[in-house]
Length: 280
Length: 185
Image 1: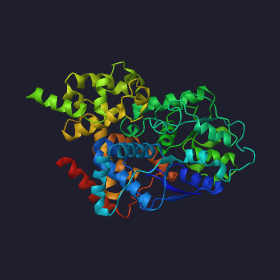
Image 2 (image 1 turned 135 degrees about the vertical axis):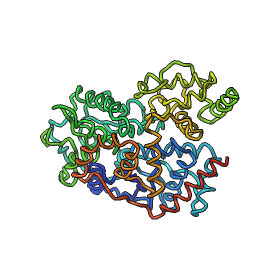
Image 3 (image 1 turned 90 degrees about the vertical axis):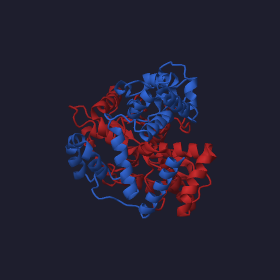
């Protein structure tokens, strides 16, 4: 199946995200077709500075995707996801804003009739599972690996697309479909500090410790994430930690391992906290 | 004179789409209690809403509160009055920048400005260049992350060269046009 893909700026350099998305999507029969000449979504920075500029950045993306024949946009980053959803809500709810954006974009010959639905790859895999070539074999992840699903904050709220904003379970459901029983823990939607970790690393360290400690307390020894910034903050944020580090992966890396894909195709060597800590 | 300015600022917030909901705030403090960085803020969101209703709007805009908002939306989900608190924080940041009221001792305005420069130059953001730009003003933060940067570089996780979109220049023109419309209106 073909999907309109918005990778976002952080994806390319993220720790094995691209490698593992390519490997897993290749196996499942998902073709992620990049929106041609996509730009940065603006993330929290653009909306913090100017709503009009933020809506032009997102408006251009929606307009390009629509012109290229896509009916929805698939992302792999919580910040891209929430920024596009936030823009879509504004452009859908306030016709004057849509008109304003179109007036500016007319200079580029772009016209946006309405924003497209935005989905995370995780949602798409779960939704379209029956139409994908989902492997039927046994889960190849060793038993000693106790996976803790971590959603971060921006994916599940307040868009109400992912059920139960504060206690979601779609990531656990996806893992279960690959034969992985995730550990239950209460840090799954706590905030990692996002870009504040650049300017206020000390304050965000407290948030990161809270998440890692919460996961460890419930027996998790491997975190799996769905966002480049979450992965980076949780991985990098353990560098000063004593013995009890927990590797932080992307959900596609864990799926790849469970499906028995070769580890070297999943970019696992790029993790800062190495997987050999848990015997992988 | 001052009172007049306060009233004008207050009206701008309370008559805006997200801001009007401040009038329904019951001052329960759930927002401040659920905020991951409330401790760092001059005032929690609850107090900021009280200040806006009380006419201390300039002080609310000059506080660091909205700049410490990480945009995690936890308050917004928890609010019993369904006030779009995170959206209001964005509005406060935009208004404080427009009026030169953004707090000088908070670093997020500089980080966001550096981010915007990246977008305007390349249409995309490269982490290394973003850090280099931000580091001109805050070298200590960048030096603190140097050991991490070395590890990331070794693992192919830090790209030093910008990736530019084909329409970078034209995107920049669109952003400038949008910005001008904003100032004019």
